[in-house]
Image 1 (cartoon, rainbow, N blue to C red):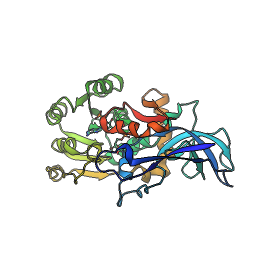
Image 2 (image 1 turned 45 degrees about the vertical axis):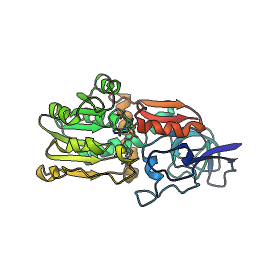
Image 3 (image 1 turned 90 degrees about the vertical axis):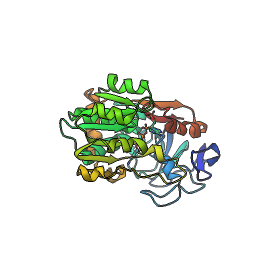
Image 4 (image 1 turned 30 degrees about the vertical axis):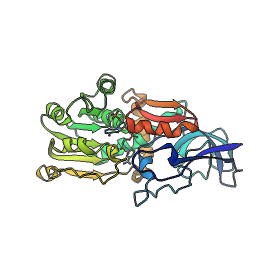
Amino acid sequence: MMNRQVRLAARPVGAIKRTDWSFTQEAVAEPREGEMVVKISHISLDPAMRGWMNEGKSYIPPVEIGAVMRAGGAGRVIASKHPGFREGDEVAGNFGVQQYAISDGKGVRKVDTSFAPLPRYLGALGMPGMTAYFGLLDIGKPKPGDTVVVSGAAGAVGSVVGQIAKIKECRVIGIAGGADKCRYLVDELGFDAAIDYKGEDVKDALKRHCPKGIDIYFDNVGGEILEAALARLALHARIVVCGAISQYNATSPPKGPANYLSLLVNRASMTGMVVFDYADRYKEGATEMARWIAAGKLKAREDVVEGGIDAFPETLLKLFKGENFGKLVLAL
Ligand SMILES: NC(=O)c1ccc[n+]([C@@H]2O[C@H](COP(=O)([O-])OP(=O)(O)OC[C@H]3O[C@@H](n4cnc5c(N)ncnc54)[C@H](OP(=O)(O)O)[C@@H]3O)[C@@H](O)[C@H]2O)c1
């Protein structure tokens, strides 16, 4: 069996180019004692991949030049010498951008496709869902009646953040690009309002929708939208710094928000979160998320691109163009 892989060929400057990747092919090795072979059927595409391609210190080491690109994925065990996994088990884990992975089982979990389709375990029931759950509940600390604003609201993390905030009886305003996504947030997901940042002035719209200020701003995008949210904080507001996708392709250091003293004036806080810090509590988060999904309180949406491994470079770019609607997944 041959394994086709996507490797990092060069560190991108600005937007990612196809030439930043190389494609290789090698035979799938036999699993050794304690290992298994996973046939990957779905690869998770994440904005964080852009950061992993850069050199320098971060919350996780960079992907080395020449290495198989790091990626979450899901698939089926096709051979196992691991005591905890059997042939036929469906699993999710950190398998890389390739068709087959040899795994020692670390960070791999079995998933139940009779409950939810496999791609959902890369979205609401996977890493983005855990990010939304722990970021909002642990750092945002929502209380009934709070005004919660979330950017990147129609995406994998943002759409779950807004729905959990509704479950916690907050007033929720989502910020997303385009009328279709905004309609979806209000009509399908039950957000109280949505702001189309591509079609209206975000500062004005936040003023209109948040007359008493923002109690929680869950930031997925950074940049000007962060600045607009800072300008509208309520007393003791909490900003959850989850991501800053508007800045990931910047070729010069991003300008800091000019109005950060709003944190001082409003005795507010701005806290960074990395989902991996909650690894020992994923079970708790996943159980509650599954309960909400089963009860019809939380809707999950995946955008599955049937492209095969060669379509990885173009598919990844969809995240940066806002072309995904829900959790972006590549089907192999
Ligand atoms: N801290 C953590 O542990 C952690 C874990 C997972 C994810 N994250 C972060 O969470 C954020 C969302 O990730 P995701 O996986 O849920 O992705 P996603 O929201 O499903 O997809 C990315 C979305 O970002 C929006 N976007 C792209 N360029 C933008 C720009 N210049 N300005 C504003 N919006 C822009 C697009 O939506 P529009 O069409 O609305 O523009 C696009 O659909 C990212 O910043 C990611 O890095 C952090």
